[in-house]
Length: 168
Image (tube, rainbow, N blue to C red; front, top):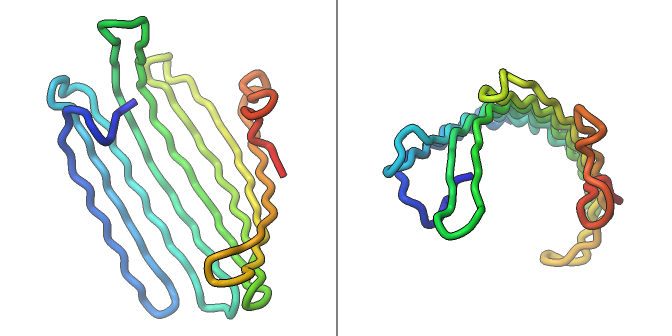
């Protein structure tokens, strides 16, 4: 995939955000194209709405559309990559401030991935993540976290530490 810091590329990034009443709206567009291989590009569009009208409750809904086409092979090694992927993801976030020092949040994410070069093969991933945080002071906290990822095909599930991302 793209080396965002050092490669031969050019692009644009636009971010807009606006707060109206007790809601926040944010949008972002990101486009990168290779200078040496203009057929390779990455595009990302994201839109988020946050609702903060209920005391101690944060709600947000976010959608993202992402596509990337990139091919690379190293001249001095056997390393190579051939990426042609489109992804659409939706996220629901709920955060609760139980006390001034205790906070909990949870988010559910669904990703739908398409590989156009593989005959438009479709893949789906579901992610659920939750965390409880206790703030000892302004810059230190103790937290407990749980994450569970379910892949569209059980054979794709990472196995064993440190690869298994279903953890507590």
